Amino acid sequence: MTGATGRSVERPTVVVVGLGPGDDRWITQHTLQAIADAPVRFVRTRRHPSSHLVGDDATSFDDVYDAADTFADVYATIVDRLVAAADQHGQVLYAVPGSPLVLERTVRRLRDDPRVGCRILPAISFLDLAYERLGIDPVETGLKLIDGHEFATASAGYTGPMLIAHTHANWVLSDIKLAAETATGDEPVVILQRLGTDDEAVVHATWADLDRTVEADHLTSVFVPGLGAPVGAELVRFHELARVLREQCPWDQEQTHRSLVKYLLEETYEVVDAIEALDPDDPATDDDLVEELGDLLYQIEFHATIAEQEGRFTIADVAQRVHDKLVRRHPHVFPPDGGDTVEVSGADEVVTNWDAIKRIEKQRTSIFEGIPNSQPSLGYAYAVQRKAAKVGFDWPDVHGAVPKIAEETAEVLEAHATGVAEDVADEVGDLLFAVVNVARHLGVEPEAALRAATRKFRTRFEGVERLATEQGIDLHSAGLPVLDALWDQVKASG
Image (cartoon, rainbow, N blue to C red; front, side, top):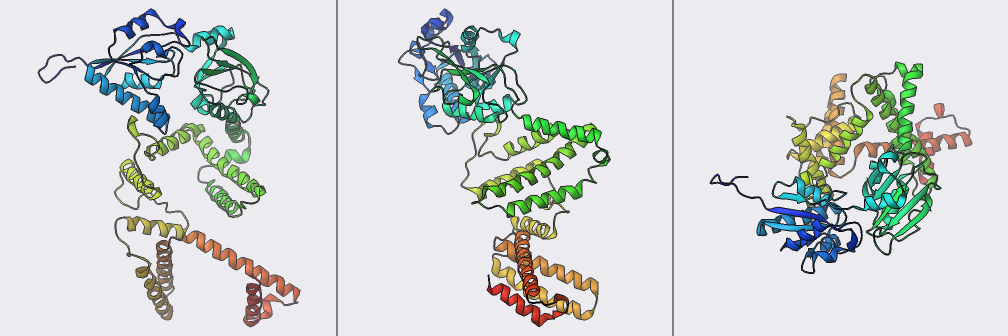
């Protein structure tokens, strides 16, 4: 790079060396010489058998691991400290366990960081010892190397041999085991610990006992010869079912995006009913929700399958789009562009940030863009009012909204007196809009409130029907006074 005078300016440099897979036997002479030549040295962790070779005066980052909330925070902090030190001293040495080129996130970040140059000295990794202890050739066996922290996604759809690294704690082993929901449990596994030390262990176990056979440590990895069914097998099977039905079922073949809309809405409402019927004290009520969520999921899969056949998009595109959107809109969880996470004070600030990011992404010209016109009218009114309120067009509180109900009620009666049906409908709409406004100010979702009120009315009137049957009363000819009396009886009984 060049400075202001046009002369070449050397970038600060981080020299990265590997400490090998185990004890001192596995460190190269090249690495030892680099350590000896470096006046300023850092070591990622002292929790490694050969870390002492870096010297007692080397700075470790164990304190970062102890203080940070996430591994992403750890990596970012380490890189920032190394860059600052390199900037101060011109060149620093950074020693990592194993090989700098195998599963070293901090090294990857350093290589991509424009603030420093990164020179890497290759080293022996744990892989070489693992291949020897297992007696396998990774190329011939088609071995797949997987980070234990990403097992659920990295192994999705794969059943072949796997070597899983970063299995440094039993909770990581538990997460790995639970990710393979279709595993039988008797699949063999080999747990490799502390390879390249006098305390190494090669333990044979089963998938069911993966997280309860050993105490995992920072020198633990797992070899899986194969799984009977891949991780995510049920979703893959479900996707294939949608394809088969689309190709072989006459009814499925006739459907289009538009013809399926009514079924999409119907299944959505049935999910809502199942949620409303959930009983926290009765796990059996989950069954209906599982079924209805499945029906709704099939509608989504059906639309994606139609689009896939038309060559427009696939279910993978749908999943990727929503995944990436959720990552972007949660900067308090996922650091944007490799930076720091955004601090938030609570859920309200999360919503504010979400809306701000959404506005930038969509580049909309109106605050109402994006509100679905086809949603139920109460929800539509609620959403429109909420958008207007966000730019300040709103009553300060509910006391400004309530009088509008009386005002709109009077206008309904005036329109009724004129006998013009269009005017009556218009004023009734204004009245409903005013009621929604009051509900919004009180923090009540109007669609849910009206649904609950309707359900309560229906339940009570069904009680009226039962009483009428018991008392031999014909509802159709009973008259209002009799029905009112039955209603009062039902209401009084709770």
